Length: 459
Image (cartoon, rainbow, N blue to C red):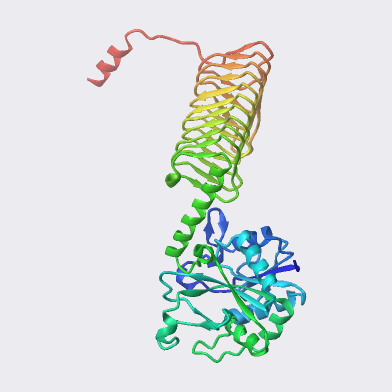
């Protein structure tokens, strides 16, 4: 197979999105719109991926480093966009042109198009779709031998004859070309149409006029070429993309109990026998190993779960949860949190930038921030690490097998040695040595007759 160059047209203004966010950067399942065809091109083996941007530099800083970004200086249509990329196209390459707003194209479809193009021995191959309702699409006109004569646009009344409007095979805006032939044909484009634009499909009759053959490759799934022009179409495409993601995880051994209520973004990885319960949202670079149980009502963002983790009704951001650890319900794990093997973050627990040792438990109603906790620790209810002095954050260090009483406040910087106990309702401000009991509270005093005194004062 010849070297593959993919040109992605992403210079459109996207006015129908009615958004300050450029259309190509609207997210679909965790990726900007333009990143989807880029990923498909890379997976199809493209050696060069060229993205055509607008003069506003909309995509600057939003593309992978391996992608070549070129500028279409004037909005002259799809033909002008490919002309802007011509300097990146090698004569000997096979060139595939993709719309930047068609996120459902797959590597498999690109590969099939390239193979059909090579097998046909033609100068150009256009991917087409057969639709039950082709309204609004350019119609494919074929010759007696089945080759493509051209594309008839239907944007305005009179563009197509009644017979042409009956054609159900339409232009997908996806093409394959021989590099050198494409560059020659681009130079012949003329903007002699009502819109005053250079249309890429106009190279097809130009190629035929010079003796070249043009073929069509019918996509077996019309959704592959669905485009996004407004937010209604964005939602429709997102729904299809999400279903594909769910299906791929299901075939890989993951149980998604209720796909309709579950969001899993494109870059999430899940191991075999992991179960995702309803109303759970897995975002970003989240990964989970084998045998995890996630949810219900759980959000994971850039989280790492090892094997056999159980997490319910919780919110986790950029935290690592190791084998057999349990989280929730109603826990909040913030960035920098590590739960070691078999540890626990329980009900109404918040942990931030802390390392919780193997087998240690933070069962309920606690805040742990900027702490290093050893193994086999049990923190009583309402244990708090007071890590901020109003100017700087300080760390708390807790040794192995420590047990804190309920309502213990550890005022950092402070360290508890191994096998330490703290009494309930203590505010620990000094280090506690190994094996000691730390008590930091006032002695109890009972005042007899206090209720009668209050009553007399009130009266």
